[in-house]
Length: 245
Ligand SMILES: Cn1c(O)c(C(=O)NCC(=O)O)c(=O)c2ccccc21
Ligand SMILES: [Mn+2]
Image (cartoon, rainbow, N blue to C red; front, top):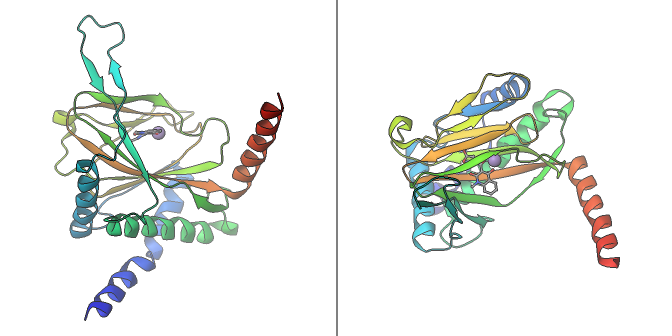
């Protein structure tokens, strides 16, 4: 019956496997980056992809800024990334909500399992909404940057890629990470059903190379309790001082 199926579904996704969490802890501790392939499995991955495609068709994504090629002769302008933020409770987001819950469970369980209950010495107690991003394939890219350069509280970036049959040679769109302290780069193809975690701070500058296919991803940023608390206090003080000006 319907209820049994729903329960089974929840049962699958409620408790992430010990091995997966060990893998996240080991890779994040050793490399600061962790890639998990076949994260949801093809069937559930496609259900998430279809929800994202529906959202995109419905036009709720922001129109990407027009980026004209700086200094180039041709007047070619390319649309950059388009994003929308969701908390997963919106209509037609059931499977995106399940994905978010599964990532939450892994992060929180890994946080508990890590030595003295801290993954990378963080205590993770919350996250941003989910950012759904689409790069229209006209060469749109994202310049090299650090997600959290100034201690805004975000400690882990979690990106789920949705791009079926993505061939980097043909479509580009590589995520290139430049881990601090080495001149080794990590090139990560945004392939379907791939889950990626990396430290959000200056340890992981990264760029999205020009994409020549439509490139979808869902990103969550997880907060460290202490850093977030300090950031909010800091902004509140600044807020008061600036408003009193
Ligand atoms: C669209 N998009 C991004 O794609 C990345 C990013 O680093 N993406 C990495 C990736 O998609 O592989 C971002 O970090 C980002 C930050 C603020 C607003 C939009 C943003
Ligand atoms: Mn980024």
